[in-house]
Amino acid sequence: MLNIVFLTNSWLTSFNQPGLCITVAMLLHYFLLAAFTWMCLESVHFYLALVKVFNVYVPKYILKCCIAGWGIPAIVITLVLIINKDFYGNGSLSKSHPYSNFCWIQDNTVFYISVVAYFFLIFLMNTAMFITVLLQIHSVKTRTQKTSRFWKR
Image (cartoon, rainbow, N blue to C red; front, top):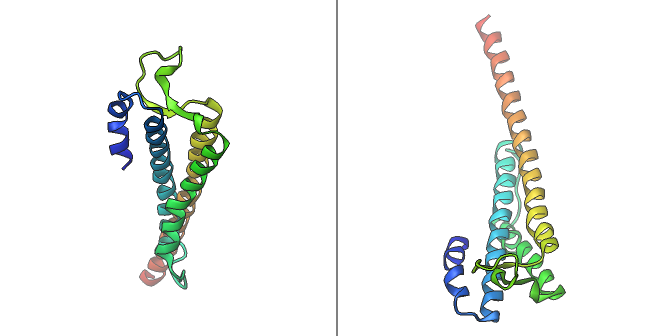
């Protein structure tokens, strides 16, 4: 959906409808955050599968993942809309970007908080999970090599 909204954004902006532009910008923002959130959930799943292999049962795991994957971005979008729906709009209305026909976040502060900071937090989480998984794989490999040497003797 992120790709579809991104590719049709410029065309939909050409209709010069402020409500349509706000909706398209909101959808683009939502699906971008949803993609980031699902990437984070994949790293959590990776961690559970490779580090916490045994005795990990999460009741209704898929439902909880879906609620987190689709719900957390919805909360962020709702907060932005509650604060001011005019944070979304057409970039061509600004004098600094006269030829950009693209509906997106117009306020830099909102962009840095709701996109860049969001991505940075997920990037940190993914990095932490990745390092944890690598350390686990390394420790399993080390134990296997020690056991192998023991049996060879």
